Length: 474
Ligand code: FAD
Ligand code: NAD
Image 1 (cartoon, rainbow, N blue to C red):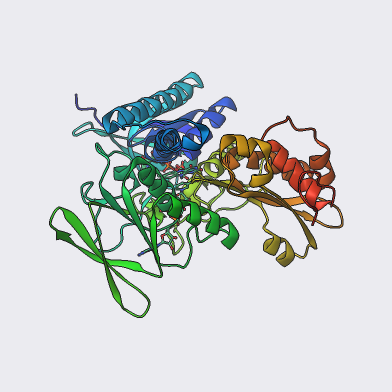
Image 2 (cartoon, rainbow, N blue to C red):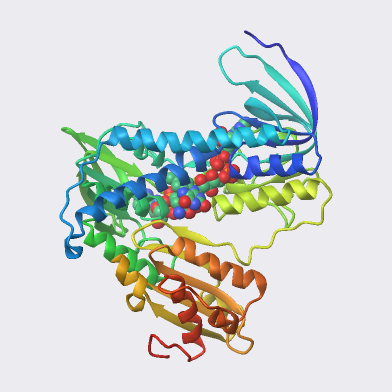
């Protein structure tokens, strides 16, 4: 059926149905705004369809195989065979359950859903080309708009993603067999998470990174533990090299890398994963029509209310800048809808956590010691090695530490860095501490269940106060 051009109106228009967009839409509808969400592809966006959720599903499955095969010390002798089609089917089921849930939640909250690609057609108007050939289009007039169009993987010149030889994270999370060998370009979030997955599944993994450490945004001692463990899993690293070109070498792909002196190196692998960052999707929105211009990086700059330069247009999530994390998108979506509805709401970025789901995991929140010093604090630091945690030992996962950074004079918790099992979960304790203005004494005095990893959080706070029981005090 061809649908003709129709015109509708809405109070809150949200473009993009990822974590930032669907949150804005649901919150807007909850607050009584007549809300319309336009999604051109799949509800849940990058995160639910090809990002956070599929990658974590693969991380869990690969780890399960690895742990079962690596448990001889515990008296377990086993071998696990991976059926990639089975794994992919399970992953797709998890994704479908969540994306279906997002659609249902939007509908149940009264959000009008339009499936199609939106672009601005005026200061208060978008034009939506309905999804599917010949499905027509419609215009939607809006009072407020939220741009939540997310990001896409950056393509290195000449390394076009073909889903066969040169993969983006999307391709690497949809393979139907375990590759013999994988060359990963970029040792950031995706490069490190997915090289861990494939190393555990039995692939021969090589990583090339143009800088001199893995996870370049993180402190060196954090990155060192992640790198060392990846090497134990068989991952080979080449630092100071950037991918320059590729060619076919029999069944393999040959990637030529260059160091800063122009020296060339060759790496052959069955598949190549390029994970060199993501770029915002703003170039397809006809932003001129509404009167907006992205910055040099293509991002839409926003204020503490998630507003762009225009009073009635908000931008949330990846499109609004770093860090490109789903929970940051969700918070911005919430705030944008609340501000549009006239609620007293604003953004506060002092306790945005981040987690890398490597082995061991990394979790951080707030300031590092160096950042605290630079901000004018006199920081005190407390530490608890995972090797001294009874629970970590019984899990057989003793790499890493919990570190807390606080203001020496007041004891206020300023930040934390955790490397170790469940670091992505544990970091929430420190996030809450910062958010509530808790001191080291508050964290140290909180009785934690024994034996749990959470005790390491308490012990790190005790250590900072010179009162640790299970480690030597600083
Ligand atoms: P997106 O999720 O990208 O959603 C944007 C939506 O807008 C898309 O559905 C798109 O189809 C739609 N759209 C775009 N243009 C239009 C248009 N013109 N009209 C209509 N619709 C449009 N973050 C974490 O916090 N934790 C993780 O563990 C994590 N893991 C990740 C793993 C991978 C492999 C990747 C790639 C990313 C990961 N991320 C993770 C990042 C996370 O996915 C993003 O930060 C998050 O999805 C951003 O949400 P968003 O709403 O801004 O955009
Ligand atoms: P990234 O920015 O984390 O890492 C990219 C890496 O590639 C950097 O280390 C960079 O130095 C390197 N690099 C850049 N160009 C290169 C080249 N030509 N040759 C060799 N190395 C090169 O980006 P990503 O890993 O693609 O992930 C994109 C974003 O997705 C992340 O920044 C993050 O915001 C999000 N993400 C988050 C999670 C999580 O929260 N656990 C997981 C995956 C992705």
